[in-house]
Image 1: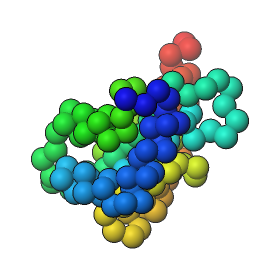
Image 2: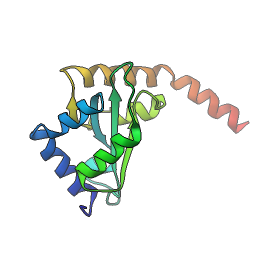
Image 3: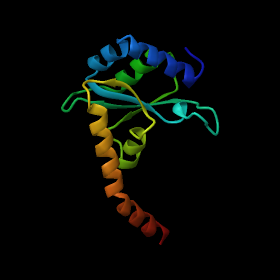
Image 4: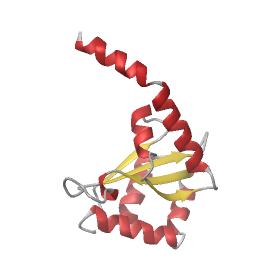
Length: 140
């Protein structure tokens, strides 16, 4: 196992460049795989402790998140991998995972990331006022 999320990211980038990560994604019906979070931060406040990976499965696909996570841990040779299902994530988490600065490791076809990113950012913007209302209600 590698010792840091930076080593794990380097390894996944190498696997992506060789096409091996695409093979893994195809086996799991994954159309989009992105890295986001602190491992990509050029000037982190503290070193990253984990590797944040978000995925989008093919519409209607029956997929196993545990099996995907295990395969990503094995591929990265790093155990502290956090995996997020973009279709099940809330609008804020989805927008942050697909924000500018995230790293696309696999795209089943050109444009998958762009479409997912536009949808996520639009939804987050359009529902912002609802999140503010929730906070106001909680504050009493």
